[in-house]
Image 1 (cartoon, helix red, strand yellow):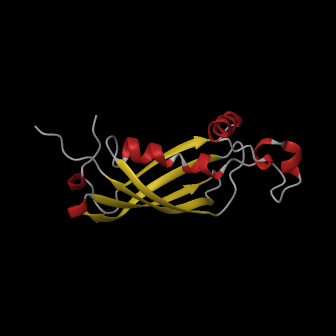
Image 2 (image 1 turned 90 degrees about the vertical axis):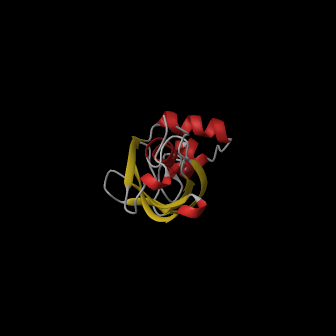
Image 3 (image 1 turned 135 degrees about the horizontal axis):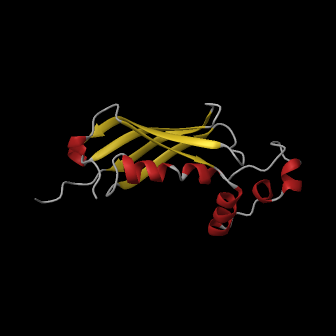
Length: 142
């Protein structure tokens, strides 16, 4: 299984992935990362926060881009080089997040692709935005 090589990618190509953020997702991420911030883990503490309820770690939602880049565009064999992100809204438990990547620049001589990355919730509100830089797979020898 191999993703698209740079000569198979065009400006404007898009791919997306959607997932509902669950209590389990947040708990597993907290265990993996060690981030037990009460705004994520404690209903009592989070109720007193500016959000009034628990919210998911920002990086739980950011991590969904991995599916798009690693499985769809460019796909398997892609090397993820960098990501710039801006958080614009909190993601709440039960929110359905759609992350989309769109090719906005290509540097063929360096085998690099730059993608606009946008995360939206079920209300079509942008919750995260940014750009990703990847190295697509190279063609397998015939």
